[in-house]
Image (cartoon, rainbow, N blue to C red; front, side):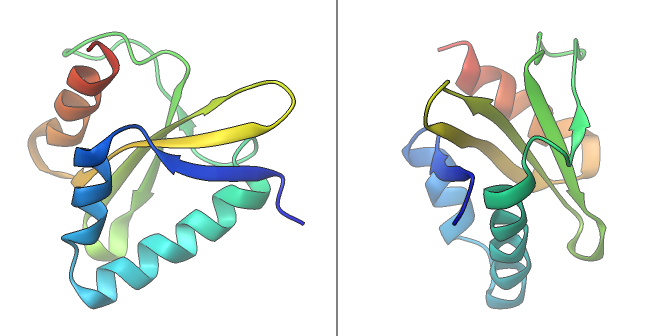
Length: 104
């Protein structure tokens, strides 16, 4: 049984996922499955970035497809992995988007 439930922070984050091409989507879904069981163990812990404070968030790099995924774990009893942004690894775009979504 999974330890974590995966959800998206908002509709735009879900649309980012849906807009991925087929092979990228498969690899991101594989990352989701890992997060369901080990979100507390995997990913790089984030702090302050040049865009905003992303403390409490983590980053997973999907180097093969050039994507980063920003997520955070929320909740006490039922822990949820909240997907904040999935985007290209260039120009820190993923961090900018994640910052905007968290600070709304």
